[in-house]
Image 1 (cartoon, one colour):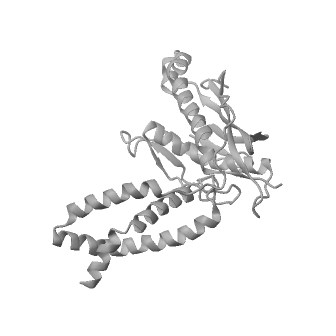
Image 2 (image 1 turned 135 degrees about the vertical axis):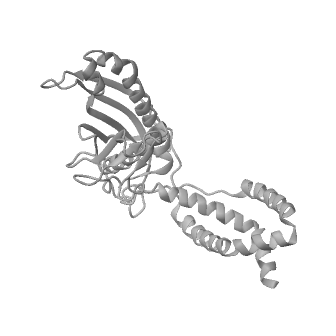
Image 3 (image 1 turned 90 degrees about the horizontal axis):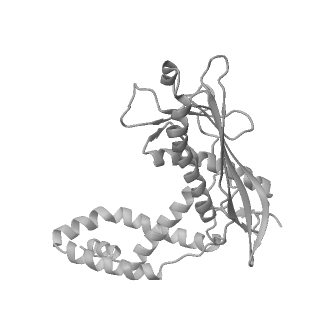
Length: 317
């Protein structure tokens, strides 16, 4: 009975709810941190270390006590009343709970979104293909003074190329409501762990066309120095970031990066238009291209708004 009473007190502890919420925030930030260490997450390290240890202890106690506490509440018939009290306490703690970023987001550079497309005639009787280019600008807050702050702007840009290339297929799956299969865990080594060469490709699939139907898009990592994917064994998708230099923003600094996504040799129309013999260009301009354009522009908008929240440019002095 003494153990059940202690468990009941633990459930309604305001500190427990505070540490559980902090643990969730730390876990969210940790998933978005680059495993290479080239770009640091912006949580304030000394404060986070102390709070993480305390949060993990609280989370461990919560996991261990949950079955016992739930059973005791059902037996006593006090579940509904105590749940209302716990909700009130959570609302009060929400006003007190806070943590500080080492480098808060800065005023970003303008998006400067640019879109261009070039249609090329098919070679040796093949279907016409197109090159699609989308460019924009996003910013990262600059951090200096830590022992690990020893990168150049070009190194930060190269690291962010891998981060954003890893995000693009995942973003497309969410945007179109598709399933992404065969992809590695997010940001476990950036893009390096995606399938390549003769390995089974990652695939974007629709729930309406399960196997054995072919996948809508298959992806294999590009070989060589470029960062990106080979789509359906023919089209090349590359993602690159280029440093535009460091800018002063009031008392802070920001690093501006140009993000470029390029689709090369993308078919103007599917194989069915080859049977018709005409109309492929009309289909591309009326339907196929607008769908791709909306996806890529939404992806660039996401990078402009979110990258500064999760990453800082750890530049040397």
